[in-house]
Length: 430
Image (tube, rainbow, N blue to C red; front, top):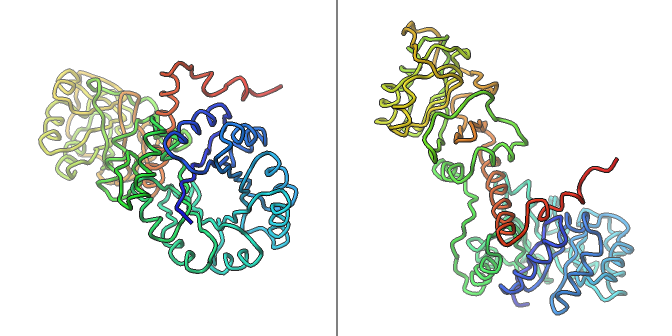
């Protein structure tokens, strides 16, 4: 079987799906997948519309059927689906009923091995039942913590004779590896449907599949310290709070920064009392290049930070300071472009008494902070990302950014935020 590109329309609005599908088809998409969220949102009508719009393309209905296999395949096939997706965790009777129904109505069945522990064994079983395709699928939530279909794909492609599909965070950089691992159906979602230029993104993936060579993507899904820094540098503090379901945003901490200045780094925590600037200044010597000094000064209104401390940080390469308390010399700090965020601004400074400590768990702006947590600050505020969740939050924040970029592009083309998101349709009734 020739390797095909299946574009997954994991959207919730039918009109947007149709527009994006048209752009993907122009870029060379072979199969069009009606994603599960889209089916749940728009029902079988969107399957009919896509088949009508693209009669020569294979339409895949990702029903994720787990019961009543026969009826679900029947309604999808009658609506125009050429391939219907059934979950491998379904009972054997559900899968066999789905396959018999597909034969009756001129469709085929793809069995998704999502959350199956022994994938080769289950693949062989459903192949014997008569399945047409197998799919190795790493779900969105698993992708966010680094999941990839590559490892399981290698063993699976040798276990069955029917074509194998792969899905899960694939883009133009990873698609060649997916093909080499044995996939003949490459399923791509976000790397295409969230792109500013869907047609160009589709062409990139097609080219990488055809040539076997990686094509650079704008998406970022890697996890080293340096790469996490790059990922958090791409997104805004609102992107990060959205990714954390509104958690992590400090309250009452205000930016004292020049327009366009951003702060990203690992926290070095400091606890002190109002006006005692000894520990905040000592922390500068303890901090590493790229760190952010985060100070709990008990919300006090006597400054524990100023221009000279900022210059010390600037020369050492420290990324910024966040103070639940007061800072002064703000005009000079802004002039040297050192990121400073504080609850208060005050001319008065206290004395270096030395109370408190460095590296302790603190609360800053109402958020618990540990040394090593990631701190992202910009003109919208400061957000804390617990270090143990950094990879997932970075990926989710990039996902938020990518979706916003696509929506922005649709607005620039003449839409409005309300019309693009179909707000009236989703308003609560009653």
